[in-house]
Image 1 (cartoon, chains in turn red, green):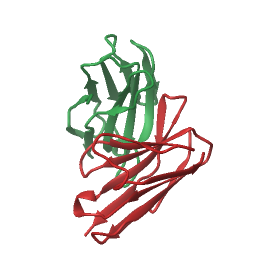
Image 2 (cartoon, one colour):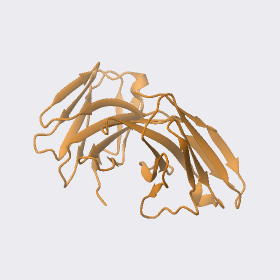
Image 3 (spheres, rainbow over the protein chains, first blue to last red):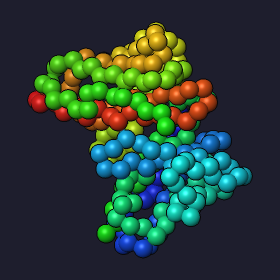
Image 4 (cartoon, chains in turn green, blue):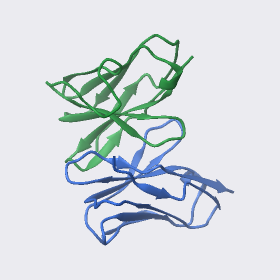
Length: 113
Length: 110
């Protein structure tokens, strides 16, 4: 398994601003993943973050809105840019071990007002 | 994209009762995972299944990988108040991304 720490755990932000979420893992991992969980919904993959290359975004998500950094094998950031109330969600960082099991951080609960 | 149909969407039970929930897919998966999410937390992995027909237990939880590889179920025996939460199934084909079910919200009346 892996221990994943996310910061901040929650935030309330003004529309039009940006928030950067940090994810720190206690071991080196090749791929890190960012998910969005809208209120009362399931998890939706935003992008896969590989160290040393650009993130791969899923359909409906673009780099300008959700820029991702992956400077090393234990750390990644997700920025939610130019926020609107529709961006209010839980954002989750995840890593996978052996390409099978996925482990999640505690999430960042974002409220945009 | 691929979807998993998870049912029921919600359950209201009495403490001590057994619980059963399942996930079905139109596609074959070679990995099934079951997670529990508490309020304000990320999902926590409960059970991982890798083989058709596999039956795996984790304490009072038992999960099975369906023989057709298109379904999985999770049972909780003798429920207790800390079982309250949202349970998600997730499936994977090969090295492809995980696909999640819509979740089952479990509420327990003491």
